[in-house]
Image 1: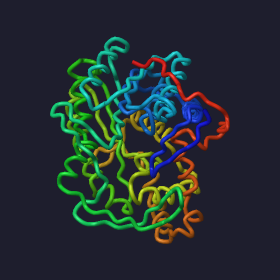
Image 2: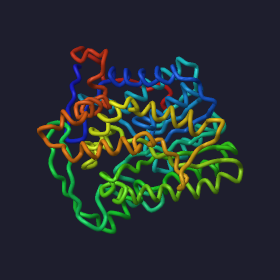
Image 3: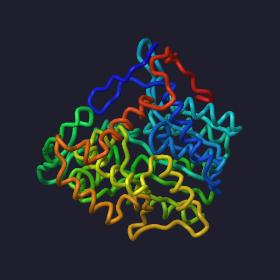
Length: 396
């Protein structure tokens, strides 16, 4: 079939297998061109099929020659429906890892469930023995608690007061004012349950109980803080509260793991085009302005560049892992440079529908959004017939 992009808001409902494979190949080639990392050897990535999770798996495998297990929730093609982008990404990764002689396995299912945790532990025991790095990169709008059965849904809302600020429809370029009502106490509770640290802690504790972590195992989860422009809807909102819970979890896990030489961190990463960030009002417009400034300053990074820097310069460097006063790893440091933020803030004040393409990199945002799904990728003939049914080798 000939596959074209079909989008609904911040969701693209189709994905292109060849385009996704090209994107994975580009990331692999980037890592191969960098100095090798003296890092982990057996890695578990929870949330491994897109964004920072996929990039982490690629860096571990092709930067550190690590064996990997990826856990993710993606769907194969069915009928006239294409597979999800994460499915195609993972198929391309598994093929490349196999050709490189690396052990690599995929587990598809609900990472929040006890069933998937148990399945993952059994696979580690039978194929890898022990894990020395656990990356937690789950991005989901809902979570069913494995013990109580309650299903939680997250919301992206401010706390306390109604919030209004500029936002953009990145398909049409229309700049408007988004107004968001504050979250209720129950919405806040549910958002923390979905996006906080409880599931991460469950994973680590079950891996520890099964004795499949090395004594010096490291675990890292991902977060974002951002500038003042986004604070009301992010840092000071429901998501920010969940991320604070994630930080508290990291400190508890660090205390648990450090007795045997292990470590637990939250890495604060740069704002990037992801399906998750596209859903947050204000953020796409901020990212578009940020991209323009950082590209002009020649310090722009995507997922793969960020994760390579996290592994090579922070987690696995001879000088030790540098953290801030809250024990956070900051690979958003280039984004948060004072001169970068000052220029972004100046642009922000001027942005309108009429000048958004001139003052920001909205075209780049739009292109990267569709590249998440394998479209608008150089070297792909989108008029050619392709088979949407792609198998993932080493799928368990």
